[in-house]
Image (cartoon, each protein chain N blue to C red):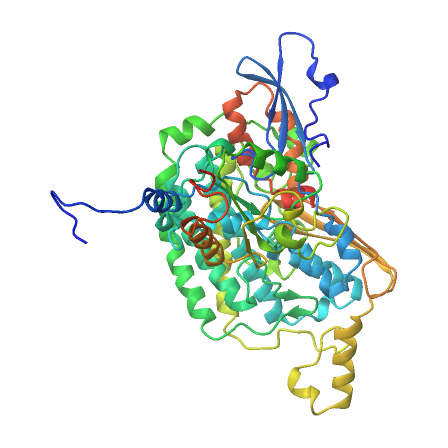
Length: 407
Length: 159
Ligand code: SF4
């Protein structure tokens, strides 16, 4: 193993013109947020060039998904963007439903639950981002506030899906069972607690002179560059482009919710911070609206035994239900041949899945458009000319997740 | 046994050293994948790893005692993990956190090393995908127990 080359610092890379030095940052580095390696060309303290080296977490998720049933593939796909598992599964599920042609038959309660989890996961993801970003800047205590909030959200996920981080709760055709008893009370408690927590976070950071010194005017990304590098999500909106998939191509009934798409024009790390904080507040606004809709009972799974297994109670009573159940469990369902692209607004930007089916019970191809990968590319444009110390801020403010970059 | 002014507490140096060592196992900051987020969760107020004396996550392998392999090990990352492990000073321990690190988990494919124990020795395996923070805390208590009982790599083990 150790005979393999572990670093790409080959002679061609190292010998540069002029008075510069080549430095490798990562892949084991506390502030690269995972396994990113940056090959830096530096002159004194100034960064002349940055070459991101990715792939240290390449998991072959797309390939693995091809060997699993349509419904099983969701399990591995959820593990791509591990800060927002529900965004992954939501996007995949929506794409698969489009291919199956059942997209307009999903019960409205299931759609509301999907919005609920998409927004919860957005808050949880931004919590991790803010906590780790502040650790990088030396402000440890923020982490405790944000992770406390995140724990509440994970509790909700655990209650609904059985697992804290990868609940696999959203399914093709709806959701895996209705929300459990007591869930809504906990949700209410969270909705009530949230504004106070946000006030704490804003109080700790927004006007904090150290925080401002480290982030204002750092890692500037202008709107043109952002679009040219295909940056999406909060990083794009902080540069003044109000593109949000939830608005541009609504899904799950997002057009019926009231929310703003926060933007800033400065395009620096501080602007990205403000946009994300505001996004959390908007997510809270959506949560309040979803909560009202969840009072209405209704089915949470499509009534189509070709896609969704019939309810357990009916299996002992009806021969047909037993056969459908057996078929779905043992060989999954078949999806008509074709291809489809579906995107959602994940906490990091436009997450898309391009699915191809050859008519079988397994996906023929699962191609991902991971927002982190495209956002990370922009680091080449924005890190140049900054100090090495500011690189940490730059990476943090782009919020890449390497499970998704390398997948 | 009495302890106080003018009184003595008798113990074997070995026991005292092991007790001290087991109460300050410093983990290495090495996040790999999803499991790393749960590894971070153990430091939050709800789980509070500080109760076990392990809250000091060190970024340099030379200052760390415990490597928590938190997540899937890609083929490209495996040699680096080996190198970081080699850089850690003795005595050192390894926890393999999660299904991926222990066995490849759901990713039985070309990209993932099927168990980090094919690259470095592992002391404790914590099951789960991801393991709950309680699970990881339990793993750390097992490491502590191993140290107190004089298992592999104890401070005086090779004296
Ligand atoms: S065990 Fe599960 S949670 Fe942990 S890294 Fe593997 S897929 Fe992620």
